[in-house]
Image (cartoon, rainbow over all chains, first blue to last red; front, side):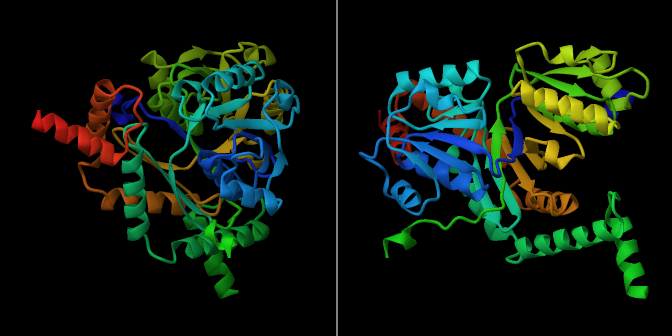
Length: 204
Length: 204
């Protein structure tokens, strides 16, 4: 049967995507421990982080990021006009005020800005997972809400079984691909094609 | 030094997110092999896929999805009015027409709709990675553009080293957490707390 050639739909998963936030403005509302984690994720992806939170009760890591000038900081409570900048591509809130959170979520949806309201799954366009990072390599583990601690365990297990130099190796492959792109611009090279080029360079 | 307590920023990564597209409309433009992959990802995440592509030259897997009613299909070329439905949350194009693609990208940006234009990295809000799936567990490998084939190798390696029953185990943890949430509603239970409840049930 022709039908059996194609994968069956599993359902129940997420669409896991590598979001490109380099030099894009992302608004973080809140300055606690959860916000600190969000900010770290964002800075590791080269986002321009705009942080809105009263200075009172700032998490030490968040305060450290502010001191170092790693985020653009506004010592204030959130106001709807904070979403007026059309360059804001994403909003993440982590505040202990469900009503304020819901208000922010609704404003984001009106403006079609992707948002994550911490601890309120129905008010999230996206969830976070447990991420292992080694240079250009990123591995994200999601249990789709079944067990965040399990995600951490699986992530640590994966990290322990990977060759220690894998990130470096991938960076080298990337550099090689870049060189090949210069040699053969416009060419979408698969491994066969790459081998051919490498060989032809060696023989030349 | 207090500074050393906090992780250094690595930069150059992506923000890897588990996007929630369940019952949300996602527009796919194009009906080739790349579109087939996009559609499978979307259906596995329970999205409502709207597919726009002339019937001529449809990939067999795409044709199979249409036949089975797994996508809402429009046998036509893309028109700007296809983006008018405010319920469309995401757009993915995979067509062999760079000019048409760029036009779609610009329209999406005007409307603040997240988009991925296949093979045009600067016209992508997000990239895909290599994903391993086992029930509720999803593991996504990204090399941040350094080597898609390497991502596949790493993903297969990870899949081979995971315990074969890990997906099932995570589903069981999820079911247990759900039960505990009924026993202790509103409680964000960590493992200690969970142990306590399990123990108290056993003793009761």
